[in-house]
Amino acid sequence: MTRELAGLIIGAVAVLVLLAMYLGWRRRIRRDSGLTAPLGVPEHAEVTSRHEILYLATTKHGEPLERIAVQPLLYRARGELVLTDRGLALTLDGAPTVFIASSRLAAADRASVVIDRAVEPNGLIRLVWRVADGILVDSYLRLASAEPHQILPQLERLAAAAENGEQS
Image (cartoon, rainbow, N blue to C red; front, side, top):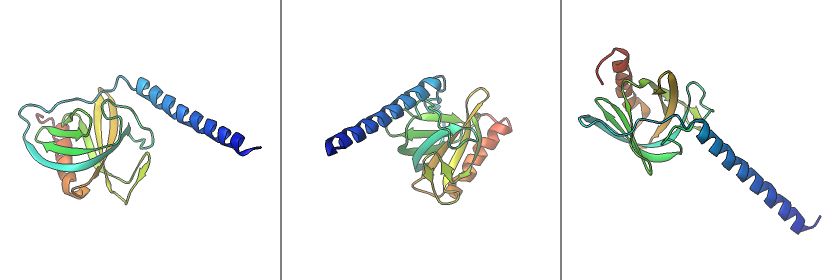
């Protein structure tokens, strides 16, 4: 076999792999097209704190290796987590602001692994929230400006407020 033929075969395999990845992602987006995160922050929400984050992924609840394509949380991005008295906002680079009201937030805890990211033990924050009636998802965040233990109590209070039936 000549070098040219070997190069063509390797190039063809690389193109096929990239095409399969592209088609798989497009199929996942179509499959999850009915799932949309709530947009926009309520008018009278009082900001309690802001934190720089790296948004990693949203997955099926309890399945950290099964990504779902919730609009507009499709891609990993840098941004800001804004905690308010009514819930939390994810302001990610290149995407509209997502607002998860405390009534949608089921839980917040720590995690170490999600899809293509493994970090030190409990280095991620996992937000468990309702994207639609009866559909729980997990969104994973990596804090850039704080440690998880510094903001987890605030997130847990938001989730508890929904559990206790408090107005959000």
